[in-house]
Each structure stands twice: as C-alpha cells, then as structure tokens.
Image (cartoon, rainbow, N blue to C red; front, side, top):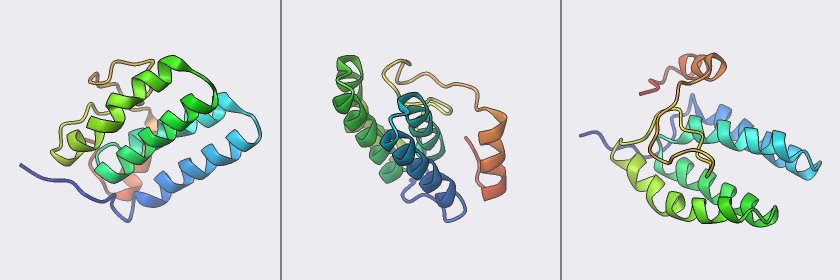
Amino acid sequence: MKFYTSIPKGLKPYYTSELEKYRIEYSHGNLRNAWNHLERAHIIGQKYPYAHTYVHWKMLQFGCKTKNRKEIIGQIPRLIFGGVKSFVGKIPVGNSGGANVPPLKPFPIKKELQDIFTKAGVSIS
C-alpha cells in the first residue's frame, strides 16, 4: 500500500493558484466563481492529506460565511475523514468535494484539469 503525504512540487503551484483565485473571487463577492476554484483545488489536492483537508476546511468556512447549512453539515465528516482517505490512497478521483455530491463517488476529470496533472507529471489515479 502506498501512503501519500505532501502534494508534489510540480502540482503545488496549480493547487496554490486555485486557492488564490478562490480568495480573490470571494473577496469580490463572486461566490459561484470562488466555489468553483475551491472545487478545482479539491480535485487537484485530494490525493494528498494536508492539501485535501485544507480545502475541506476552506469549504467549511465558505459554508459558514454563506450560512449554507447543508454545506456546513456536509463538510464536517469530509474534514474529519478526507485526509485519512487520502493518506491511504482511497479517494474518489474527480470528486469536487462539496456537500452537493456524494462523498465517495468518483467523477470524470475535465480535460483542463487532466492537462494540469499531465504538465505536473502526476498520475490522476
């Protein structure tokens, strides 16, 4: 069994960029765009416990700030268990991480994000 820890150096700039874009969009009140960047950061970082957990933390904060009860309730178990699942390599690839999708269901990864993994030299699965 392979244990995953930190996000690879080649992938980290893409992950960090999505979080920065989230911050900018959120600060301008563009909540839909902000959330989209959190979902993208989740897909990029979900294989790595710290990155994965951090995005769920940001999603929980987003839910609190927008008073979205469904998101708040949905993020708590994801925050607790998401990083553990990443650590042992048992993640639903392509899952966007929000409470609007089943937590264990994999989804196809959009070509644009697939290209990021390819450029970073990182396997998606």
